Every structure is written in C-alpha cells, then in structure tokens.
Amino acid sequence: MDAVATAVALSLFPSLDYRSVSAGPYVYTQGRAPVLADGVPEFNSRGLELHTRRVWWTEDQLVDQSERGSFSESRLRLTQDASGAVHIDALELESRLLELRIRPEMGDQFSMGLFGGHYNQVLLAKDSGRAQLLVYSPQTLTLLGLSKSDMGTDAMRYYAEVGTGLGGDLIVRAAGPVSLHLRAEAEGTARRRRERTTVDYTVRGGGNELHHSTRQELTLEAEAGLGWKQDRRLWMVDVWGQHVTQWEPWDEGGADGMDRQYMAVGAKLTGRFYKESDPGPEFSDIELQEMLETIQRQRDEEDAAPPPPPPPTEPEPQPMLPQEVHWSELEFLDQPMPVWPAGTPDDFECEVQVFIDTTGVPFLVEPTVCPSPLVEVSVDAAEQWRVTPVADAEDTISARFRYTLTTAEVEIEALAPMEDTGAPATEQSE
Image 1: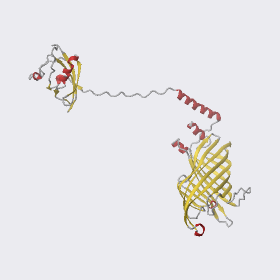
Image 2 (image 1 turned 120 degrees about the vertical axis):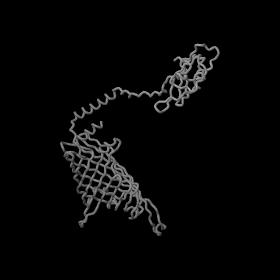
Image 3 (image 1 turned 120 degrees about the horizontal axis):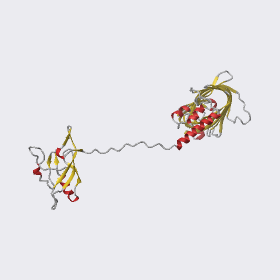
Image 4 (image 1 turned 45 degrees about the horizontal axis):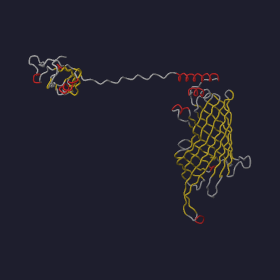
C-alpha cells in the first residue's frame, strides 16, 4: 500500500514536500477589552504581511517509516503610522531548535527561545488524486528562553514555555487546474517567567520579592481561497483571519483575567513550490481500483503460499581420530605382558586398540575382540606399554594401533629386537 500511496500522491502533486511564499495586505486591531464585545471591530491599522513555510514529509518517510514529518514557518508584518514611519507589528521565526518573536502589539518587545522552539508536527499527509490533506499539530517546547516584555518589569528575563494545538490544510481540485483551499489552526501556549522585583517600603513593607508570572495565549487562525496548479507550482489567492487572546493571572496592578486581544484579517497571494521529481501518471477511479485489487490479490497469494523450506544445515564436524599405524612400525620401549589367570586356554587371543599421545604413552585402551573374563588383565597390561613417539614430518603426533595378545606371549625381556631382522622375537597374529 505504500507504493500505491506514493503513486497516487504524485497524481496531483510531485511531492508532499514543498516551500511556500505569501504576501498581501491586512488590517488589525488590538485592545485590552474583548475586540468582539461591541460587534464588528474597527480595523484602523493597516499593514503588509510576508509569510514563508517549509514542509518536510515524504523526505522523512523515505528515510524511516516511523518518522513523522514537520515544517517550520516565518512571518513578518509591517505597518505604517500617520507620519509614514514603518513599524514592526510582528516578526516570528519558528523552528524546532530556535524561536524568535517581536510583537510590540502583544507585549513582546523581544523573545528568543534558546533551548527549543516552535515547530509543526505532521500527523497525517494524504493525497487521493483529487484532494490533498495535511493534518498537523503546532508544538512549542522551550526549556530556556530570554525575553523582554510587559510581563512585570521591562528588563530581560528568562522563561520556559510549552504549547500544543491542532491544524489542518486541505486542497481540493475542483475542475482542471482550479483548486479550493481551506486551512484552520488552533494553538494554546503557556509561558512561565521568573523575576526578582523590588517592592516599595511604603506599600508592601519593602525589600526584594521573587515572583513568577505566567501568560497563557490562545491563537485561532483560518484562511480560504482558490488555487491554480501548474506542474510543480500552485498559486493561491486566500483571505485569512487571526484572533489572539492573552490571559495574565498576575500583572503590575495585581489584576487577573483577560489581559489583551488582537485580531487581524487580510488577503494574500501564495506560491507553493513542490519538491522536484518526475510527475506521476494520472489515475482514473477505475485504474486506481484495479491497482488496489491487484495489490490485495498479491498479498493474499503471499499469505496462502507455503513457508519457504529452512536453509540447509551444515553437518557437524566429526572429531579427528589419531593416525592409525601398524604395531610392527612401532619401537616398543617397554611392553609388559598380562599375567593370565589359571585355567586360561592355550589358544586364547585378545585384540585391543591402543591410543598413544605425542610422547608414546597410551591414554586409551579399547578391547575389540576379547572374552570378558580376560579384558581387565589385557587392558591393564597394555596401559603400561611405552613406545617411541610417532613422527609426521617434523612433529610428533598421536596415533593408534591394534595388537593381539595371546597366551603364547613371553616376558618383556624376551621381546628385544633381533639383530638380524629388527622384528620382535614374539610372533603376532593380526
């Protein structure tokens, strides 16, 4: 299904990753009382807004399917007073690592998130071929920030801030290249500011006091308009509105409750520039349905197929036996014979297999053909034999040989090698 989602997404736009740039006029109003209390507010201040956005989605998905995309934004609003001087209404630079805000109308002369900032976490990105949907959550997490505002004194103070919300961006292709655009977003934040103030002796007893001031803020935004698609570009004309409400439980006057409201409306022209890639084919509803059925059929066949046979296992290596030699090839240094018990037949034979180490000393004696009553004496005698070590190349090795003991064997003194032949004096039968 991932391949289908990618192919379908490319049917409308080359990628779900894009950059956008917006510009347009706007008007706003601001006050400590609710701006909607007396009906439609009067917008006496005018300005120009510039807005940029960068969205990462499929780039993160290609790296790791568990990753979620994100995007960052920046906004600049400029106004002009009656004398023609240009002022900053709002400057906002937002990213995951750093946030900068200058909003004189909202009490922020300067605010910078040093550790953490504001970003938008993409929760869902879908493209059906006719509609493209982006659902995201604005996130604010600043562990340490520096600000200068009307919260308490005007000095620079440290703060921590958290916030979250929910937003959605929808583009629906209406006819040909014409599309409808809708966006809505809501976000709430809380900023905790710590400062030490000097209290007048005549008012509160005097001295220094450490207090914390918390400002809550709720921001609502919405926009709607029409779009025109051209290859990897989408041009949109939108109207938009923004409403910001602030609460400050403790201020210089000791009051609490609603502290400030801000409302702005405007229009803008937006250009979206999608990530360059090869455009995908146009899929009709029938072709899309056939594709989905084919993939489902392939999955059913894979589930019904028998599991593959296990890989062949290599046989366990067999232990290496000592090299086998004939007893006549050995030089016996000591070969005591067994003491046969009374009544042993004259034609008795007992064959044993003797294993010797690299020094010529037996470390294992195994009877192979031997009557059980005489096994013990035969094995005991063979364990006391000593032979010259067996050599292979320049090293001595362990070896094994077979030897047949008979009642005709004589004492070890009679087994000395003969001078003329070099063979043992006692005859052996193999």
